[in-house]
Length: 418
Image 1 (spheres, helix red, strand yellow):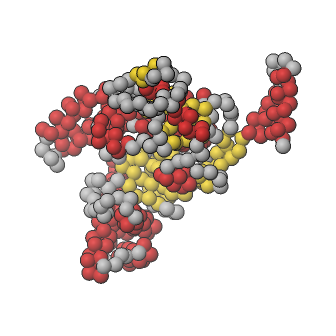
Image 2 (cartoon, one colour):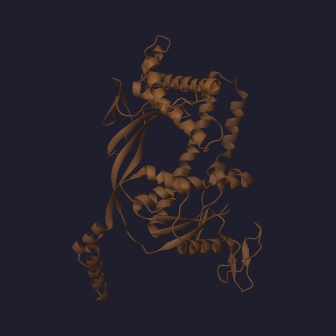
Image 3 (tube, helix red, strand yellow):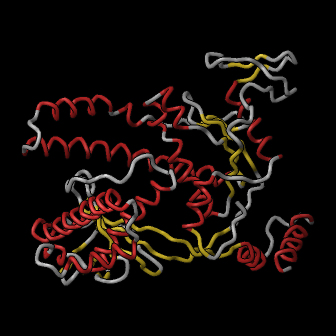
């Protein structure tokens, strides 16, 4: 009711020709349009390098890898003998018993809850295998490829830019303030060898619903990253293509080194750092583009594409554009800013159907312009964007199953009609 009254008074001031309405009324309107939401949020900070102290964390990652491999082997042996699966509760009890033995005394270097967290990861991997989400069963992991361990409840303390882990203090680069209640702490090692501090936080954010009154349809393409229904093109720098010469050079240098030697490891780190730089540039561009679209539109219509099939046809360019990761970023940005993303069905005809008369045409990928018998001559991407907006506006809101699961895990205390 308060929002309706405020809106009516604002429209009155605008209708009588007042250029500016009272500021207090505007503040009351903006306050009534805002609402809070409790979300799970991740904060990632880089640990300052200290070889002497970092050696302890790297050793803990190694111990976590031995626990993973032990329980993967135990699950396989138990299934081969009995045809059954060891439950998570049984694994948690068993790992605590093994920590007390002399044979597995190194497991005591990890907190008991961290050991149980590794068992939970094994159980999650098997549950995904049982449900058919992944094709193969969990496999053994080399110590160099096992990258992290997690404190689910205790064993750490964060204060300022210092984290205390089992009595040892580590400093991290606190490039932004963290708010909310810390739930878990993860120490992660990337392929470059750097250590990162990842904090899972429950945070209450205020979502401001600043309405622009616009909705737009967007078509994804290989020549132009996005094309909206107004004919504007949003290009995406192909960061991998820009750095492909350096990538090939680093791969050649790595191939010349003897595997396992010190020079091989240095060349491998150089290649991993170059790949990480490309990924960071692409991610930064996606975030900026997502905020740019949210500044202009309230509802954004996209097509639910089969990216795996597109990668099989066009390969590296589809991966370089990163449309799937962009959609994940856009869904998160729209959630924070009170906007909406609508995905239409992938089998809805958008490119071959004339946006003016609705006649279906048989065109190929080489045909960049649609010539219709009704006299319309239009770019195929623009025609598809118009049809996407029209189909999304006429259909009920829907989203793919992965989006529903991801948002339900991230959002608590807010009802989402997905």
